[in-house]
Image (cartoon, rainbow, N blue to C red; front, side, top):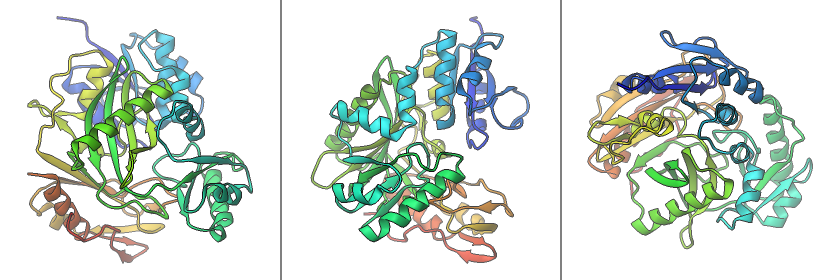
Length: 418
């Protein structure tokens, strides 16, 4: 019997998925260490406290662990640079540090993709006071976004010059609240209309293995970009899915990524080729990965990622269920969460697998674009993606969220799937 494999799992204190990865490690009989900036999040596992704002210091702390790790893996965007540095120090297979840093700076990412000829929105970098001028160069509508925030935080569409200055001021205030420099250059990007998909994949020696292409049936048109519905498998034409896959592979190569999980966001305009919104050197966020299981063993996404990181054989990457999906419950208003009503009714709906509310009652919540969290997640499965979408829409319109004592229905359209 071979020696036990060891993995360091890097998780930010805000992470939803520590338990998911530790459960996967337990199934694979892997020795796991949680490296985090949080107070001890779980019992029964070894932990090491790190400072994610000091990637080099955190990486060196991980690199001196005994016994020596066989892999270092980041759950969230906040840990990917630490993981790359630690793996390099340990002599493990890893993405180049500059490649990973490019995924954390959207302007650097855009420049590298442009140099490689990868299809993406036209863009400009805007210093303080320049958003209006850069938007005029591109032509309205445009999307203004910070360079280094996640989960659509600070991402705002503007449709005309009167919106430019107040939007710039708002985004810079969000940067301040996030502990970032408020005078950093912002990205101003051409708005690309059309459907959007997410691609979940694993890179192995530069080759992309697609685990799922996920449709986003609810239009993402702004002014803020709250993601709500995900369904898979994709209902786009095979040729479109192939074009999406090729684009994600080209984007990863352009940045220099060659190993580990990737998560790509891609727009599909009605009459042109897919356009890359962004690509990350980590897997899908939140608890959305629970909607993805693979093969007859019904292995989780986290199991697949750990297998890849440790060089273990992948048993089967085909979907374990005909169709699955997740409804992310957005925060409909800023205030104090009073209640989430209708959960038992949702659980009684045919096709619903689970409901997870991730913010406790009494906690202050912040809506997009200032916020970066979701109230929770609803999971469904069914015979086909249209059925799953319909089930999740029913769920969304069964739940009621109370903020500061006022009932608000989360913004999920009631319409049937197309």
